[in-house]
Length: 247
Image 1 (cartoon, helix red, strand yellow):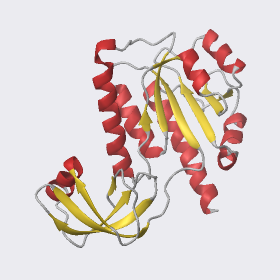
Image 2 (cartoon, rainbow, N blue to C red):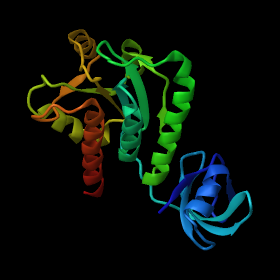
Image 3 (cartoon, helix red, strand yellow):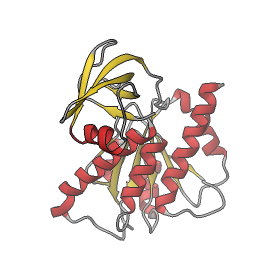
């Protein structure tokens, strides 16, 4: 079912309107009709089923029917992604949002091959946030995850303080630590996933992560690309959470 977002608070039986790009998407791209049902999430993060009642030239009118099922994970997952080359970050944001990440933070690390152009960061951040919103709508998320401005590695570790910090690292032994992280999904309020760039983590960065209390995990016997590692780990955590939730 298609999912949209509004800033207002939704109340059962209330009448609401959607305008702008979402109105165009509903009317002209999806070609929906009166009587069709969508899910709309209000500014407080609560999703509701809504029925389309009418169209005007610049807006779609809907009636709020009742609460929709919650789709968010038990833990708030933040992806701290080593800044990658080219447009890889766009794909990482899209897939991570679909899989359940609540926040995405691009991070400058010692071995980053690419460095963002400061003059283009504002426009790129706007595009990244637009990608996150589209992915949230497509996947039925109850919230639109926020994409943060680029941080330094040290600032990212400070930002992650108080959460369970998870660092996939090719030198980590076995899968026990990853299994333990998964087992605690329902007990952890905040989980921070750090992914190295194309060049991987430096020894200094791993030492800093250990000092911050990070858990090093293995993702198996293969070395994954930076654009694969984050979504792969988040997918595993998402499925584990779904299994635990459904019993």
